[in-house]
Length: 208
Image 1 (cartoon, helix red, strand yellow):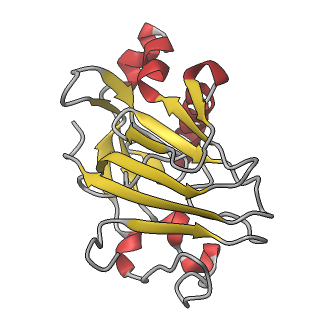
Image 2 (image 1 turned 120 degrees about the vertical axis):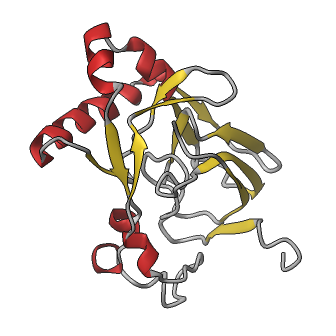
């Protein structure tokens, strides 16, 4: 792996809870240029559990009423890794080398970037919502209560079962997805089993 640092080994040991990607998110939306695509390969997967759910933010946009879409389209939201990675709230074991996946602490986790609430896909030209509970902090121009209520509605809408699909992993499964119109959730229901995955994320463009 030293020859290919862009490939990340994602290990979840047997007997431990998973903590990597275990809530709804779009990969690296807190970057100025978030990841466009993610490729994930299952080398060793548990016999049961560990599915990944994907939610179509494009479909979520389509099912909104026209008045709500007109209200949302001009808005922007603040994205940051602070909530997900702040050692004060999430613990510092991952920064001390005590977890299977180790992180390097940086003050950059507190940086903020503003992205449109509704983005246009650079290839298809189709629109989709671009918010996620892990990294979206607040909608610009709204009060905290207003922003929280609106985001909660969008999160609830976008993860309705009919707007999602579910991947069941087997050894050798390779999944590729487009973060520009999908968010995903790694289900943590296989504590007794080891899982070994390999991940690559591809740099994208600034959302517009």
